[in-house]
Amino acid sequence: MNWLETVRWDEKGLVPVIAQEAASGDVLMFAWMNREALQKTAELGQAVYFSRSRNRLWHKGEESGHFQTVHEIRLDCDSDVVLLKITQQGHEPGIACHTGRHSCFFSLYQDGQWVVTEPVLKDPGSIYK
Image 1 (spheres, one colour):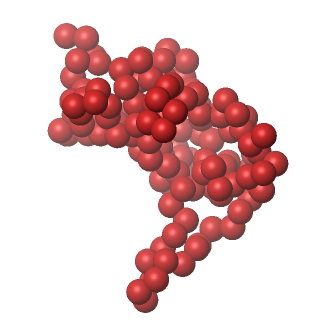
Image 2 (image 1 turned 90 degrees about the vertical axis):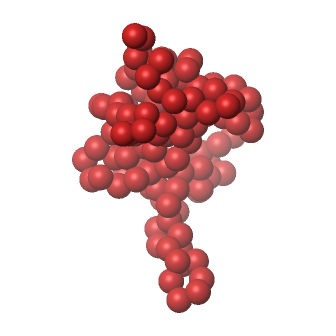
């Protein structure tokens, strides 16, 4: 069986993907992939996602230069979530979030409100033209 056939794609042909920093274990972002994106990710060794808002493939870093080098591609026990173990490229420390932060998960629920826990490492206006 083709390895892509093992993945349980949703009704839109997508699978959720978690990008985790290989060195630190930090969860950096959540995105979606279709078959073509997962295939290209495996071939290139860099993360390629499917942008639902743009309805097209999105090579992470294509605009920002913040590419993701993929070390491992893992599939969960139900075959319906992909985990990428990556190294975030393009800035030190790596910026995975479009807000200019290391991780997209920078808001912490605390005492009935969301508290921002990570600084902006680079102004998004200078990243995205």
